[in-house]
Length: 537
Image (tube, rainbow, N blue to C red):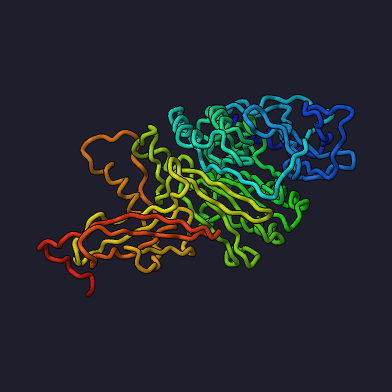
């Protein structure tokens, strides 16, 4: 009976929203808030040519800063921040650039509360902006999947991530790429308190663990997110960069009615189309969403939705996508065979996560799990530096020096000249197999390492104790390893002199940064053990 009631309520909300969508007009003014009081005073002037949206349509304000938009009974009106202006922030440093209009509120039978009834449509929905000096060069901070399931894991998030960046300088704003919490949406306020400690303006997007699961329509899966953070689809400008934030988690799965699927609803892509009409083609378009576009034969992302997105970006030569969700770190490049329309591939940075491997692993000196991800990437966060319409990305491992970009794994001791299958593995966290990775032993000639797609043996070594010790380890067992997209290998030299030998590995990323790591191993006299049989036939 309850399921049927939910279905009827959800259908009712959808029908009511559709029926009344064009029945009302929201209007207001975007103005220069000269005295910063959040109110439009008589002497304050309107700002022309500022985009305002209802989540689908995008209009520009007129010469007096006025706008008019159609509005239904489940809409959010928001201003699209133009470059050179700032928007007001709430006490959690979250944008206050929107007005939620839900006269009946969210469905009342949700496990986690949504928006309370907002009442009649105001006569004027105004947005105040203040002027700011925006340099074409700026830096942002990127979090993937904080995803705390419990108060204990929220403590881990604070200790391992937030404590490292509290009060950070020379960063303009931060963004979290979804899965702000892990299904328990009552933790959203604690998450907000945590990121507020950093002291930066902060943008958020919705992940599959931030949803209302007890709904029958995808358009209602963001009710609690909207109550806590505002619109799930929006955009803003900074310098020569236009950011578009989208909810790309379709729930329930439109194919099966169960679970979720990566993709977009038509009206979301209509918003992107309408939004881009007001963005110059020489700007950098940065798309931020949760599930990567890599659809793997359509099993995880709707191919037709990705294709329409690529079609909309056809005239924009400078683009970047940001995603998370996978709890690994990967650089995706989409070209003509993927439906991309330009010679230069579209780059998607599928970011490593702050929660790493879901807060698993042994506890470190801070009392937090090691949380190394399944591909050998340490948990952490990223910085993106923008210079007009160009960008550079750097990953920062939690609790490590900024120079820690490569992990080397190899045996610590080998027999001299003894035939061996031992190897040097280098995991270059921000790398992909188009990068150059080289090694040298004892300052000899630099030689190329070979890219491999396999499990990182360093991660397997972390996993090994959990399955082999006869005592219980504190914490939670990490998940099984998966092939790494940024791993290189070369045979370990064993025909050198007895003693200690130094390995150096260097790697160059896509932004011409070269990083190094070093290690050492020992060669000892070979004992009278028979050599292993040759693998040759």
